[in-house]
Length: 209
Image (cartoon, helix red, strand yellow):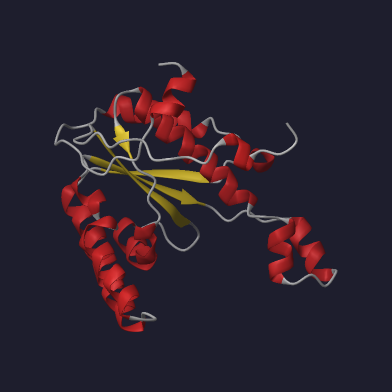
């Protein structure tokens, strides 16, 4: 598949057939992920592949448990209802995928941050000056994973909502606090073909051309 076809044709898929994803295809997809650029070539990513449905259910139950804890603290009834809806499907549909890739990120230390702190810059100001290079690096790997999945005929979705259950995931998946999950990517043969969602026109977002 042509690269531009993959970019234009990729969609977020949330419903999957039960067809297993062969390990060789998962390896191809993750190999594309590891070839992403990263700040200082640190490559701060680790990919956990989860295919055991009982583990995926425990993860989903952890998300539901956390959302239940969040609902009483919602700002208003509308926000509470939205959280309840997320718990029902939007945050947990990964449990029905044949495979999930949990993307972990190792801390990315920056000597420049220490220098900026000594110069008196606040945490907010430093974030603006050095906007999360580690997370940007891992995000590039995630995009490669999504495009490679689509090119091989699979559907996938970049999920961050489930990460409210980070503490539960640490226990279930055993990765410890030295790393953090930054995405959950369900993967499988699509069982839906959603229409493309609208994108802003170039004229609205490009300057200087």
